[in-house]
Image 1 (tube, rainbow, N blue to C red):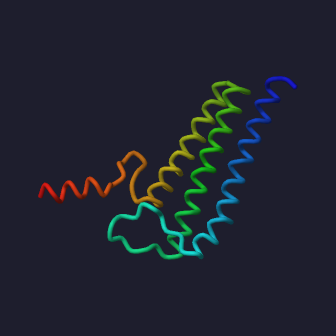
Image 2: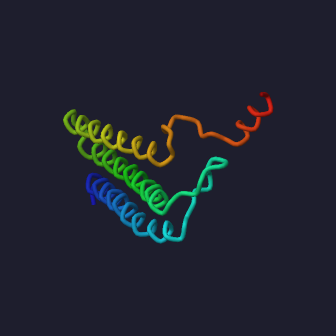
Image 3: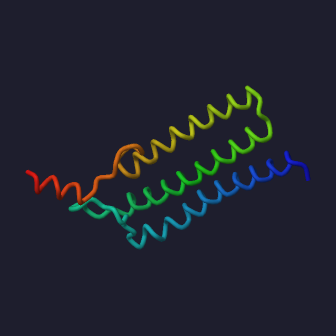
Length: 131
């Protein structure tokens, strides 16, 4: 087997893994949401999530992970197999679209942008003590 075939096969396997993560995540998220799964990091005093919100968050996390794997597969195939200006340009557009989708999903799931710090109980406690 030559190098290009190996890289193409690896890219296809990572593509398959990305799709599998999304499908398995959708299937596994349903019983978890039915059982009332709640995130560990709910803000203090926040109400429990409804079935719909819980399923949506679990499913969103699966989709995020699957998108990351699909981007990795595209990068592997484009850079290692066909590094032309046209293929790199197409890769850039695909990565931009998938990154936008990832950011949008992250905002929907957590309520903040990926680059924003997570609110911590310690910081809230020190602010209350200072005031």
